[in-house]
Image 1 (spheres, one colour):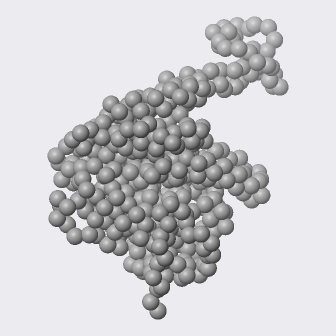
Image 2 (cartoon, one colour; image 1 turned 90 degrees about the vertical axis):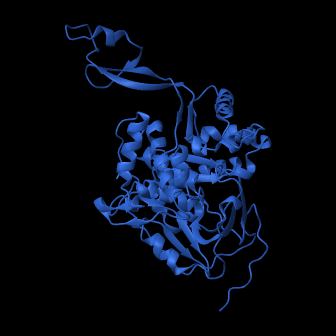
Length: 439
């Protein structure tokens, strides 16, 4: 049966009044540990290359912000244990090619395939004009899109609410809504399903949607920053919030505009520490985190009662004593840690003329970067090391049209013929961040 022709797509929203008729989906075991989840979508891409490259369009390419960010997390998560800690929802319409299902299943993630024969798979047109600047992309939906919400996670696989990191790509106001509903649903899940289990807040990575990076949305942007852990626009999107372009006359990245834009945005939020990671294509990524103070309570042993020979006088008089603990010889005092902040550029993995030769298609590079960054933060890495993971993840995404080639398993797993851990180690040494880790 030939699928009906698609209705006129809405470029900004899901189809109004659409009712889901689900055929099936795969369930995730309730005991599965989850490190990374994205609410980005799966999209089948049409990629139209810059005219200067004289290449025909690339069709039926697995894509979408969700798919590429899942790739970024999966690169550092070999099977059988780590690959299943990464997940997303993949909406499959009546036209979903079986070959794509097999390809994505081969990653052995906990991705949920949701089938619906009454709609078409979301498809998108990606048109590039400048091979050196992937931010110059014309994009439009070719079929109606199906946006994901917290309710999708809760209804399909509630265990996804336990994720240690969450990737969002959306407008400022929608980000606020998603964070609020996600944290509420997460709290309910632990309260009802795991009442004796302690849980912490997940790391939330917000990627602003390009169309709404405008001066009119700047206030909404600053109101969203307190709700996320990392805000990561690209250089053009950051500039868009501030009324600029972020691009030099020759088409290159305006690095000074990136630095000033971060300074301006963080200066408007003086009472808390915020992290911006600006993705800037061939230039790399700029990390900007304003400093701040963090108050903690520390128990100090041996201070109850009179002084003794064992009393540490420096420890005794450092800070403000807030009260006496219940145990014998224990007091609790407030301690202030100072965060000096970060202002640093880290290069892209592929740079210079040799790097330009390696880059075949920049589609999805930024999303893949954030998947690598998100899973690194989920596993306890600091922001600079996490950006290194992101840079390495992006390097695999842009070496070819579509997804990198995976061969082997476990210790023998290779993407595009290379071990991810070896590439990460090389990059970390190059940028002075130690040897790094990764599988």
